[in-house]
Length: 95
Image (cartoon, rainbow, N blue to C red):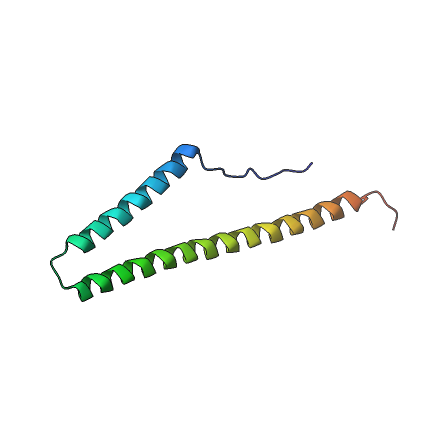
């Protein structure tokens, strides 16, 4: 008997909330940088720092996802090999 693992699927509401939260946080940060009482160089530095942080966060999330998917593929291959061995094994076979 083969047990297929259940894939976790995000709901549309969860996806929408994550996108809205990201847009709100990035917008609030950008408004804060623009309205900050500092020279243009300081605001520019903060803007570049925020962009670097956002791209780094996306890259980290992608790397973690890729690593998790690779682990799942290896796990499925190992499970298939085990099932094949168990299916071919005959405990009543004469030695």
